[in-house]
Image (cartoon, rainbow, N blue to C red):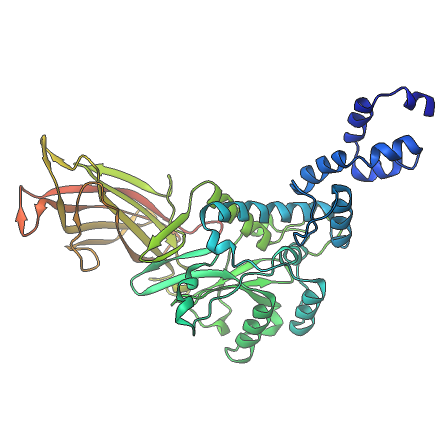
Length: 445
């Protein structure tokens, strides 16, 4: 055996070892001195660390630098020895994808992510709240203990109220921006709703995410079955909550030896990362504040129409915190966002170009399923008559509509005049808004 190995060059032996699992590499390294030396080659462990953990530099699970990849891999395995390794790798990929997007698009939100919680932190929460966290959620908190939360009493940090990594929306005077809570806030908020709002501790639900804007929106993790729920308009004592993830996808949430352990928290954050990565939702600036806006930006959930040079984009989002599943008229509430702009070529009517146009009226047809439930024909939008000029930013407004069913649509048109309402340069013309969906999604954010 040793003679055969002596005749085997470095590269063939390196290739053979690279095909083995890390545990098998450790085993064969015990065979002889030659294999032990080859198995200790740090370039081999650099490859393993990159393939399994996407590490390009040797570091531990807290980001501290290490002298070599072999030690890095060893420390990672020791740090998470109590968890299924495939699940550790999956949770790290989830966080890596989110952090990469935040680093490129919203670094001020990434900066709010806290260092990972310790096992003793998790045990303290479980003892105080008398729950057992699902394995995927435990791991999510081991990587990052939620976010640093805004200090609403400090006017200097007011803008940080919009740095929630889940994001939100606004319409009328209502604003939502959802943060992932650190464990100490999970304990505090869960205790509060149990002590003061009559929420039942027997439900084994804990608050893991919350809005820190003007409207209350709470996300509850059921620690028994691993489902994530969001509160509705009803008082918490009514226990009316909406699941955020399809139940059929949740499995093995407490089973160390099960296959593909996944609870709603992990699935929810993975889906959030997919939407961000694919540009379905984006960062939007309103005034001086930037935030993740949950109104979809791409088809088929967002529609775009252009009429006479006026472009209108429209999309909607389900608003669970204003919905009431027992109210037949307002069972499902949707907010919709309208973004209108005048293209650089200006307003073009019958071959004539105008440097501006102004909205006068709106007409909406709102359907629940295929039945018309509302028809609106009125002046202005939210009391405004937007004046559009070529190449300017979009005029954006939000409104909402309740539906008796979880599926519907909105379509219609705006009436504009070329020039200005006070000085029209021609007759009124209609700007179409293509039908866009009002749909309760499989994943609720």
